[in-house]
Length: 97
Image 1 (tube, one colour):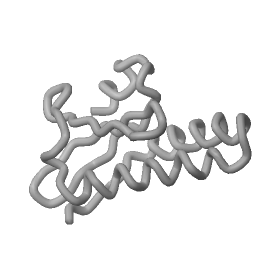
Image 2: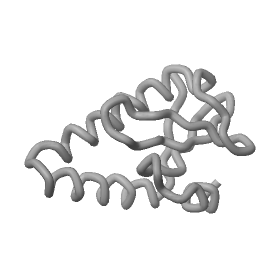
Image 3: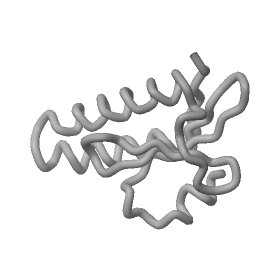
Image 4: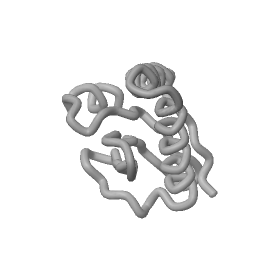
């Protein structure tokens, strides 16, 4: 298992997504966070499975929600740099890389 680290901005990404889904249906925000957790578990298990999209940044797509986890990895750890809606401007996560 690869150790996961998170940039501070990821907390804001997740909070915004949770707020949006929870406003639509109570409990849906928690389901979105659970989907992110499953995705980061897959990243931790094998980061090399995911496609490189920009320089050394890889992306993992959530299955149920239209969000993407952007991360970098080395031999020991992976750094999650953003969790954003799939249609969000890529400059947001690229500025964090």
